Image (cartoon, rainbow, N blue to C red; front, side):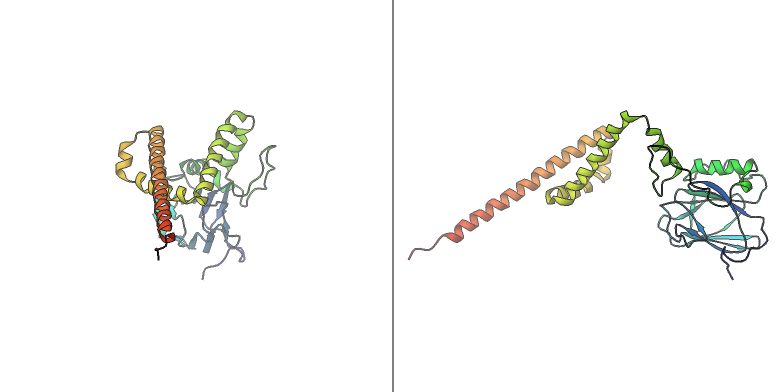
Length: 265
């Protein structure tokens, strides 16, 4: 029967997992079934907001490793291909959301480049290099203690190291902030208008259908041209909606006047 990682320690097998979510570490694989996901109840909890709470399972039975996707939202990938269930081999690269795991047995990397079709090639390259250097098995088994955030960078739960590095890079680069914040605030204002204006919602829905057509995409070249075309479509759609409403209001007012007329005695 599958066992949990909380069971009594067993002799280590030849298989290990190199793991790269928000940090680098390794984990020996013992016989039994390991649940992998975001949940604290998972045997292997990964810091990745794109993962399902119970994302997949890894079962070891002797020299056979089987990976099964547990109907996850964003899928489980092995060597770049989405899988439902897959028997794993050494040097297989598993990708879950932004997380990369590599199965290895302590020998040299034998898959060649093997990184061309991956979703997270940079993380995979880091793990592969650790294995090639013989250092993957010596990575920390647990999650390293959290380091205090640099001044000015608030620790935010769920951020990847790349995202934190980006925030750190903004320190001292205040000239970028107005552009970034202006784009964000424009997006928030547009969302507010669409949520609270029927005219905006109707125009948004109508234009969205039009711009997703192959005919529209074939007519525009580049971001600026697309922006201008979408803006012009929205102007036309809003003007048409407002015109229709004004005509309806006028017709209703005319009907109201007729209703107020009284037939002479």
